[in-house]
Image (tube, rainbow, N blue to C red; front, side):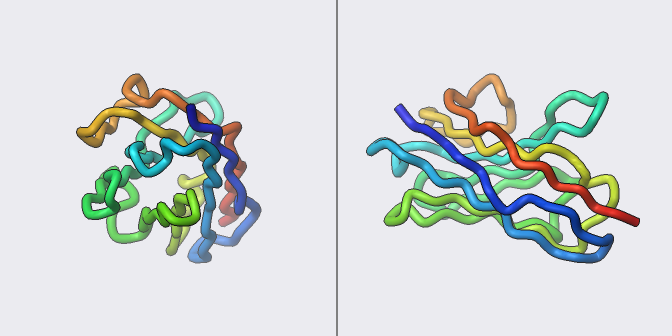
Length: 124
């Protein structure tokens, strides 16, 4: 089992940067693919980025490609989401998620464990 805790959210001006962190507990972290999702007010939760178990494969939503970078440190049981050139439309609660599947998925249905979320607000 994996427990996830996100941190690093906050208020930032458009064009600014934030780095989200996801601390995982449990010995199965290195066997989990990791993903970041977000949910804006009144909208469904959507895929943002995902990373393979080894960190060698990364995947992004078109809306964040080139601005966001997902990474992980298996030795520290940590996953990260570096967000640059933030836009007001990036405002949402961001969730870290872990999946036991080998194939990296963009679907939230394939993720077994979820953090509580961290708020990111981008002002114009």
